[in-house]
Length: 536
Image (tube, rainbow, N blue to C red; front, side, top):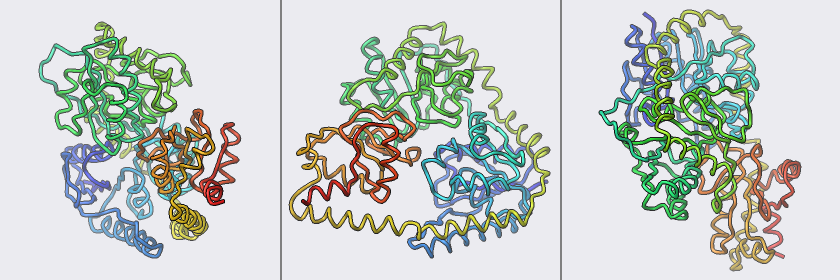
């Protein structure tokens, strides 16, 4: 009997956390001894099996010296726990757990599970835990790296390679919704997900304005909660939908809401393999989704051959509409109108909905716990854990990774100096009773795009609030993992029109300006340049 360690931040809320809990049940049922290494200060909401071991993931000290010590201590602690419980196979979930798992690798087999579109994280989030070098070099010394969809695996192969043939696509087990007998469905459109900028529920709200005009008895239900709730409430009010949209928050009885709905909609910026879509299909609710990067096409039975669609694609279990670009909150975009049209198509076509639900019944079988358990045990455990790594090479790469992390503060000194100069001038401006907003008013600038979603951007937004300068959107390299009251886009997205782009990471102004000048004609101003102008 083998001992398996599951390393996960918590057993609550997220899809990766639920996957870890589900695998603990599967492995225990199959006769493995399971040890779950997790932060026991957090509430456990998912059913699990095995022995809980206290292990938190705090490596973020207040000083660089503390960070270095914490990282090394957490790696040492994990190595000791693996030895203490005689772990044969160590499986981690999400990037920080993966990073610590591979750094603590000894004789046990290490499996890293990813639950995101990794190139997006590496592109926008330059943190060491998911930097490109970490993926390309360090992670290659795992025994297996798993991906929730073929799209995510192919994305990895394209960007980071697989020189030791260790990548595998393994779907997450999905909880099939058990519904009470309910043959009467209403004209309810539903979505499920945290209120976070990655989910972009504002696009669905805007599209629903059109749906409501055509179906007076229709309602929109948004399940989930998060920092974006005030912004979504504002959009609902803006489009006069206060009495037509329900947002009950996080609920335990998702199946009861799905049992009444006719259409499930998802408008995320990217989705590795959204379980909410599969759960909706299991509850008899077909899906309309924008063409987000990730595994959504695999769930709806749509080929990946046709790229950058401009018209809807009909799938076996749902409909795919063009990816929705950000263009502000004041108008309903072409893509949002197409989304609304396909929602209406499913609302009025009972036969199409029935056919999609029937087709989904067969497709969903491959996501059952029994099938996923067979993949893990009969395929991965039996056929993919025989590799012997070059220990000397691994330790060299491991030390380089830790060294890079330990020098992070030195690389930030220049940034701190620039921000000190910026804030000093800003303080003088305020002492003189002035605001940056007056600069925009004096120049006839009514709407701006902000580059960089950090503290300086927040200060800027507060400074211009009273002057009613419209913020069209924010451009940010951390777009995947950020919450915002405004649409957030990346440099890969089309940039909407505005009077100017304000660069808030002033220490990188020239490099950013060069990038922007290659893709847009909108004038650029750094926040420091604006302050200099204000003080003349």
